[in-house]
Image (cartoon, rainbow, N blue to C red; front, side, top):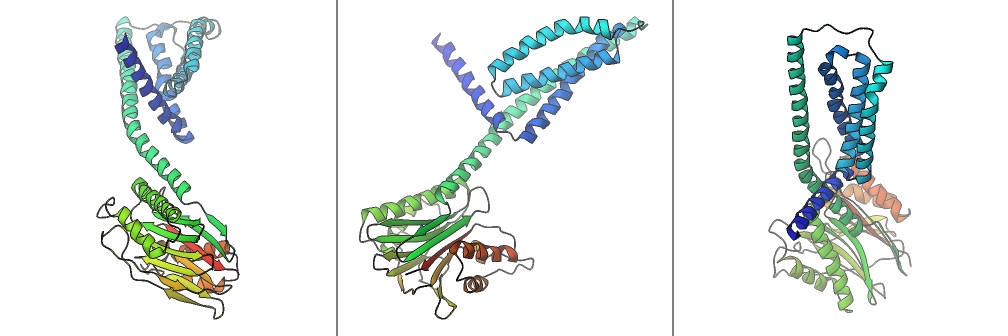
Length: 395
């Protein structure tokens, strides 16, 4: 009895998994599948007219075809989605309908006469109809078995994509944040369901840190590394009140190096501020920090030569200092913008983004973010994740 219950529970779980796949199908795919089932089983109505050839009629055959196809669709919906009540209702309705329909057809769709059919020909047609009916049923069974097997594989990939999208939305939401002397805005748009770019702002009692990370690769594996980076940064800030960005990069590298494959690494760019509004920045294999100076209406590129994170255990990291006046803007961008190529395979580069920064420096940060990404899209199609993080001195 225990073994029986265990097998029954196993079958129930398989049915639940299959139902989750069918429920996840888009409406268009569901309608296409239901239409195929309807057409397949509607054949039964016309085959039935061959079995009862002497009383056959086109109208009665059509009614049987519509009922056969309609009930088949109801059975498929109930079975694939595990609607027990619908299955019971469909069975009762079909039994009652099949008991009522012959008498109804005889009264309202009767023939004025009977066909005269050669018995030998009728026997051959009935055998052909029976074989056709058998093949239709077997074909449907094989079709459902194939769809169920492939469905598990497709559903697994679909689930991974949906999980990746949820991870990305959780890890990389749009950022709008205000500090006593600075305002921060950031946006990351992935090229697929799950990107490799991460933007974040973290703070503790000593100050705040705004950073942008670009994980090589895409998908769930990149999402896992992104979550490691985000949690490691926040843990480091909470555990060490006297943190500095060079020490932070060393800590991140120590975490990522033993866990990353040889083909996976992380480029990183960050800007930090203490309560005295002194700014420090660091880069790990990343593009320069763009510094728009309001006094001269020009952009300066600030860089520090460091290796990407996750490559070598003994890597050393250094940092630089920044001085911002009121109205100055710092911009961090990923190579998804700068490497955008046009039809001639010419990459955008940093210069056009610097021009956009100068032209829109007086606008809200959200507007500048949109303008910079719009400049990249005007140059070419997005093929990689595109992220922008802006910091403006307001006091």
